Amino acid sequence: MADNYILEMENVDKIYGSGDSEVKALNHVSFSVHKGEFIAIIGESGSGKSTLLNIVGMLDRPTNGKIVIDGIEQREMTLDQQAVFRRENIGFIFQSFNLIQELTVEENIIFPISLGHNKPDRKKIDSIINKLGLEKRKQHFPSQLSGGQQQRVAIGRALATEPKVLILDEPTTSLSGQDVQRLFQVIRTLKKKGVAILFVT
Ligand code: ADP
Ligand code: MG
Image (cartoon, rainbow, N blue to C red; front, side, top):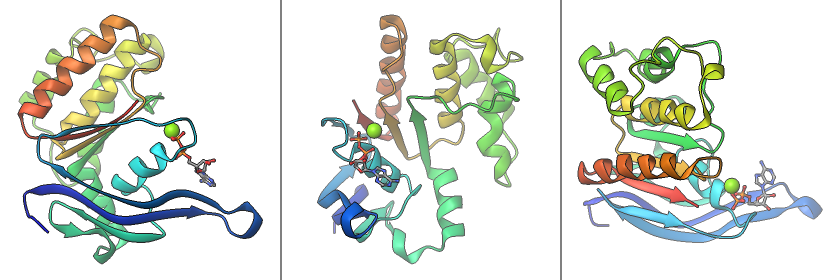
């Protein structure tokens, strides 16, 4: 396998349930992603897109197959190692923004860093907040924000850890045209920085 790939999947299967209720969500999926590559994944509802992203993002394990992220084979990691790896290398943006309602904008963005042993870099966090146009919303709570603003917080949270792989699962579904434009602007910048992006639409 070439070592300039950030992500490689080989013959990945995901089977949910068993017997009569068995669902084969992924059937022998293989692909590779370079640094800075943008991959769009399309398919009808129920075709396994979210399943694929959850497996790439180590939120779920495949039934069969091989996954290598940044040169490390996933099945050789313990669940604890996977959790740390995920936090440090993978950013998620979901359709529902999954913000913590009890935390402010700033606290939500810092949250993944605070789970690790690293202290948040104030300058970097402020620069992310400014770039996303949230400087006047730092102390607000998610319920006080529009959908587009909440999504920008989710983007900020995904960027705060400087991920190598960014995963977006139907992020534009509930956004206005202007917010979609803004999202793509952020994505272009990340792509230039070498972040690999998997985008389900
Ligand atoms: P998509 O995101 O493309 O709409 P999903 O990956 O969510 O598709 O689902 C793929 C298939 O797997 C669907 O048939 C879905 O019902 C099934 N599925 C997804 N998650 C589970 C689960 N946790 N348990 C059982 N079946 C599931
Ligand atoms: Mg889905």
